[in-house]
Length: 215
Image (tube, rainbow, N blue to C red):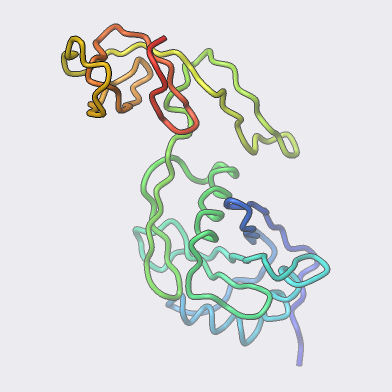
């Protein structure tokens, strides 16, 4: 029996709160099948040696989840995905899907918004949010680069922003736990105490989108 072994398989590694995902982006022959379940079965039948090579030792370990990207089955989907680990193939993987979304964003193939993916267990959706809604265009941040490409952004613990839209403040209400939405100068919306008014400058945690205090 002839075994198809590509010379190079290109992958991108990511982690979701420590859970690793390895997305195959090039070099792996595409599986056959009109459904994602059929493609998964074809991978198992013809390309299982590649699964083992990508996620098993010495290149991987038992915590790594692999993800092979395929063309979508549905016209409204971004891509098809077959997930696998060092022992078998998976119908779906939550942290693996997050890894796929962030990898596609890193590669410049995905922008913020709601996106649809095809998997062996059906169609799933993922929301890619803008990570910098509380940062002004001239703000300084720390950027971690990998091979010359930005991989992550370290946001400051707090920023000062002006309120441009909110309901009128309630004078003297400084101890109530009731909050209201306020639109900041960047367009981001944060929950604030009732006493906050338009024109107030606030300290906000951009990492959590959380009001800290008046500036």
